[in-house]
Length: 77
Image (cartoon, rainbow, N blue to C red):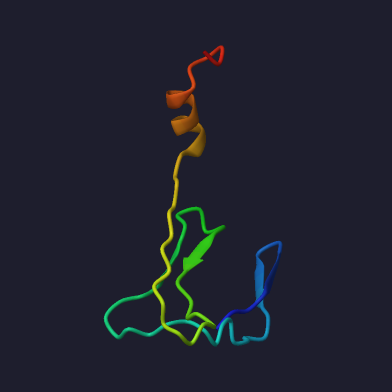
């Protein structure tokens, strides 16, 4: 479920809850979503619309600019 909210002064007012996604997977042993420490981003594994059941491979590259600086030294040479 998800809900909007508003904050004014010291008051917090939640909005009406709604279904966030009908496609969340349930594998029974663990959560397939997580919230970033800053609370601004969410990562979730959703069920595919593809009925064939093929495996999807994902690559996450974290700290992209650090890696780019490592591979391309200052001055670009």
